[in-house]
Image 1 (cartoon, rainbow, N blue to C red):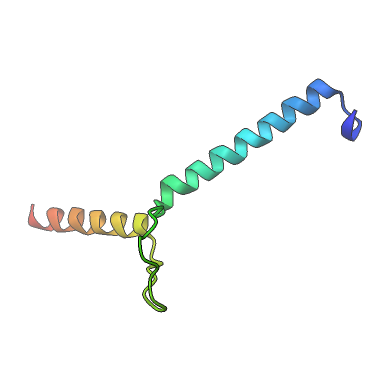
Image 2 (cartoon, rainbow, N blue to C red):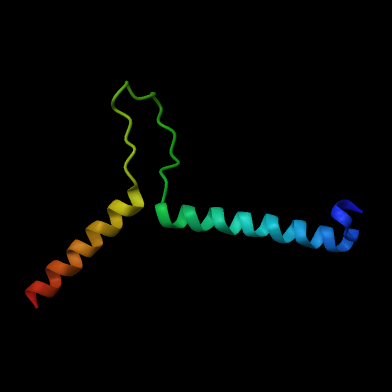
Amino acid sequence: MPAGVSWPRYVRMFAASILAMFAGAQAVHQYYLPDLSIPEVPPKPGELRTELQGFKIREEALQQLKAEQRVD
């Protein structure tokens, strides 16, 4: 009996915490849209791109919406 609780309760809480961690990781990946591709040749020092692709895409979409609203 770990932590002074029954085994069924312990297993339920463990499963809930694992599912919460997976859901949180998925939410972060959906928000930031990380580039998970592996380049064939490693980049030279100073050439590594570290900007957030998801943020960049959202900024471009917002700029397009603002431009369309100005035209209308």
